[in-house]
Image (tube, rainbow, N blue to C red; front, top):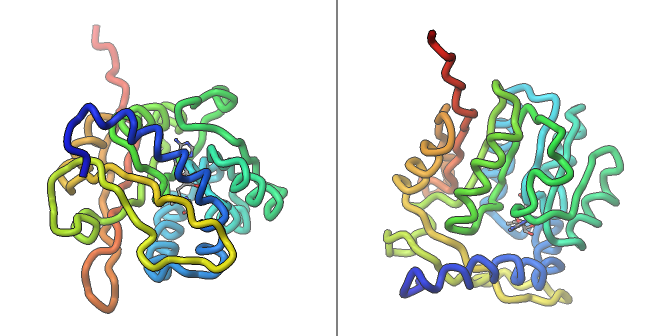
Length: 238
Ligand SMILES: C[S@@+](CC[C@H](N)C(=O)[O-])C[C@H]1O[C@@H](n2cnc3c(N)ncnc32)[C@H](O)[C@@H]1O
C-alpha cells in the first residue's frame, strides 16, 4: 500500500502505463478464459445491464470488447472507449457494428459530447482515486436523465487481502502467466472499502441498487455491482 497521499498522482499515471504494457497479456487471459471469477461476473454484468433495457450503451474501459460484442449481438447500439490502442483495435476488428474510440477517461466527454446514452458501464475498469471520482461525475452527465451508470468492481471483502484500509495497492498477476505474451507489470489500484464505494457514488448520483455476486463454491462475494442514476434536477419552486 502507498505510504503517503503524496504517492497518489504517480500511481494514477502508472495505471495506464501498466495497461499499455500488459495489453497482449490481458487479451490472452480473456480469450482463453483464464479468469475463473468471470464465469460469475460476466453474466452478472450482462444481466444487470439488460435489466434496464437500454438501447444505447457506453462501455467505459471496454478492453478487447467482449462485453460490447455481447450487447451488440442483442441489438444494442454500443460505444466502447479505452485508452489502449491495441485493445481498441481488437475490439473494432471483431465488432464492426459498434463504435470504438481510443480515449483516456480524462478526455471525456470529448468526441461524445453531443451524445446521451441510456446506460454507461464500467466493468472492472476503475482503478484510481481522485480520477474515479471525476469520471463518475462525467459519466452521469453523459447518460440520459432516466439512464443508469453501472459499476462492477472486485468486492472489497475478497480484494482487501487482510488489510481493510483504503489506499493504493500494488498488484501481481498471481499465477496468471500467459505463454508467448509479454507480461507487463500488473496495474496498481486504489482499494476502497464497501463504505468507501457507497459514499463515493452517493456524492455523485442516486444509488439505485447494489448487488454482490457470489462465488458458488466459497459462497463469498466476488464482486460489487452498483446501479446509479443521475441526480434528479430540483424544480424551481416560485
Ligand atoms: C480489467 S480491464 C477490463 C476490460 C473490460 N471492461 C472487461 O470487462 O474485460 C480494464 C480496462 O480499463 C482500461 N483503462 C484503465 N484506465 C483507463 C483510463 N484512464 N482511460 C481509458 N481506459 C482505461 C484499460 O486499458 C483496460 O482495458
